[in-house]
Length: 276
Image 1 (spheres, rainbow, N blue to C red):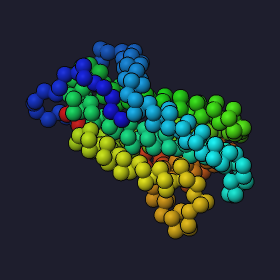
Image 2 (image 1 turned 90 degrees about the vertical axis):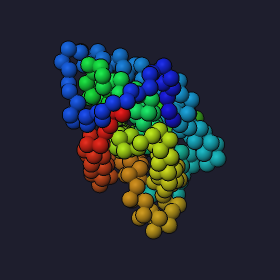
Image 3 (image 1 turned 180 degrees about the vertical axis):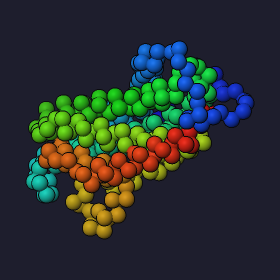
Image 4 (image 1 turned 120 degrees about the vertical axis):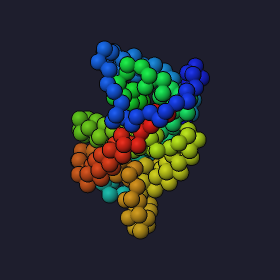
């Protein structure tokens, strides 16, 4: 999930950098121009990394066509009586959110720290909010692109209906995405190396992938496993998206859990973040 940054010089030895909250905020740089330029550059770097591109843009489509070919879009024998693929599409979006938050973002931050890129950013007039906001923006853009691809492919291939409320579905998508990216910033702040970020990210991602309902419908689970899965943040992402996309309803419980997860993660990440 790392992105090639070989052109950047390695970090320089020196005193420990201040925390994110203590970093000075220069005033002579136009933040919006810097933000847009850096976002464009980071987006191109993202797309040049095959694994990141595959898991974000390709893997959800692969699951759509693989399971769609097996099960079609017949009744899923689940509450709500919707088709199997119709129910699965929000789960594939949740999978993308999990991949970005647990793998792409933390590995990118840890890699940039390892290679001295964050230290170089710290030496520039760029504000910390611009540097880190760029990473959030790139991942949100990739999430929107991945979702758009699913929303084009699923109706054409399997007659999956669009969400009953586009605004509600978009709101749920952005809400869940931002909350989970906060978790990604936390992992990126805590992990000492890119390898550690990758190992921990995978250890978190794959259990969530199979237990959250994102890949396997939870109505197939025994009751105890469904209850245990409530401890996983991705379960609440999946439920928030499914309720918004399938029924046009806002799942307040899932939103509350994700809001708490996002706020706590953001606060701890801001405290623990290191530039080198």
